[in-house]
Length: 127
Image (cartoon, rainbow, N blue to C red; front, side, top):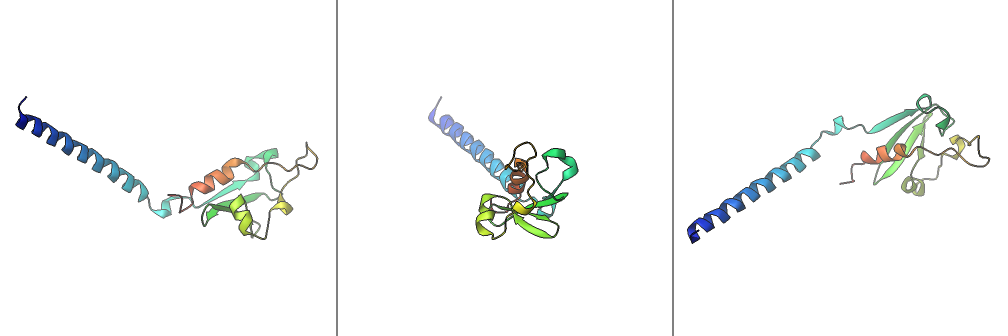
């Protein structure tokens, strides 16, 4: 193979790499451009969906993310912190509406992990 042919081959390979790189970055930018109105910012969970595993004394909670990875929930018109970051910033806790575990004295029913995990997916500043 002569030098000219070799240089053309390198130029074509470089061009193909640039096109591939551009396409990949274009897909990432388009993925970030999902309108906020299409993202569920709040998730409502109901006691009827969890039965005896429901961790609260209220029938329904609405969970959401606010600020940097702080997860809160609303129940009966009040706002409660749900994860560690939110609890550290709040003067309120949810002990008053947190159900006791009927099988183990002195222990509360675990809050399902998806409550926090799903809310964190909606945090604006996780990028």
